[in-house]
Amino acid sequence: MSMAAEVLRLMPVRNAKKCILLTVVILLLCSCTNADIRDDLQEYQQRVARVLEITLPDPAPPTALAYPDAQSMFTAVESFNVNLREFYRLQECELGTLVAQRNTALGKTAHPSQRYAYEVTLLEQLQQCSDSIEDPALKQKLLDWRQAKQSQRSAFWANLIQTSQETRAAFGRSTMLLTTEADSDAGAAISALGFLNKIKSEQGFSLSELERELKVLDSSRLPAKVWRTQRYITGYLETMSESLTTRLPELSCPAGKASEQVEILRNVFYLFFIEKIQPVGSKLNQYHYQMMPVWEQWINSDALSQPFKIYIQKQTQVEFARYQQAIRQHVTLWQTLFARCNLSPTAPGSN
Image (cartoon, rainbow, N blue to C red):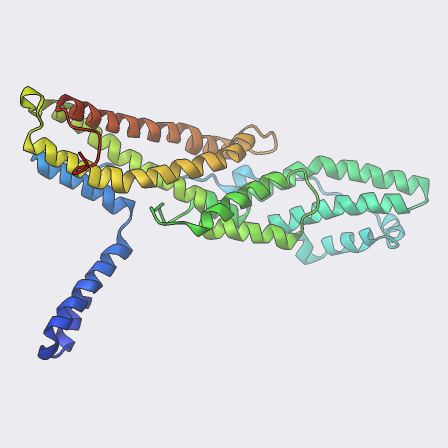
């Protein structure tokens, strides 16, 4: 039994009017809660097909985001060993405690974020310890170690970016699509992406700060949300445009005057494409261009793996270009019809 039917069954007859009003409110709330760009695209397609009295084929379901397997992106880093005699000579520095923590069972199975934060702290401590130790031989050894660890830093950063549980979710998995509603997490997610890019070479961040930013990305999953929305819009518009390319030119506009059918089509175009689909596309563009500086740096990064860079390039360049082309082609079809029928490119009723 539906929620509305259950309400009707339980309410007494004398409250019938209140019951009907409550039922309408419930139905409105349900429709508002469940609607998203998928519903709008489907409704837009169905309305256009109904007015044209044709059947428009459904687009193929968009494929899942095929984020690369973590193992294919992981970079193994050579172990760095310190003998016991040298280790005991480091006890006068905080470096000794840090190295001891790394050699525990927990330290050897640290998450990518913990490992990267440890490596950055280790570089700081190697420098501080070499500055405080007077033994020239040990001082030089510490500097040599620091140089060796510095050369490994980019590999640890790459593992953080590519194989962290949080980034894998943010870049490859999202059950949600973009909406026209304000997204309070979007700005924080874009900032978190910039933070991950910045710490490749900067010091001065803590593990708690890093894990907080990763949590923001995991919670919002903005990149995956943008890319999945991009696929849905592209699929629907490409499929519709393929049919409309031959159908719209057949519509009659006698003496350059729009028929009733064309007038109705314009209403459908504005009510669905302009007022519902286009605002989501505008938000998609906004987020795309805000994140693009980071994507461009990562695509050109020597530290990151080829599978990862190919994946990012596909979403942000190849598929985004296809999405833009789908939008342009679809809009051009309608603009051509409206121009031929001398319809103003304004919202219905605003002429």
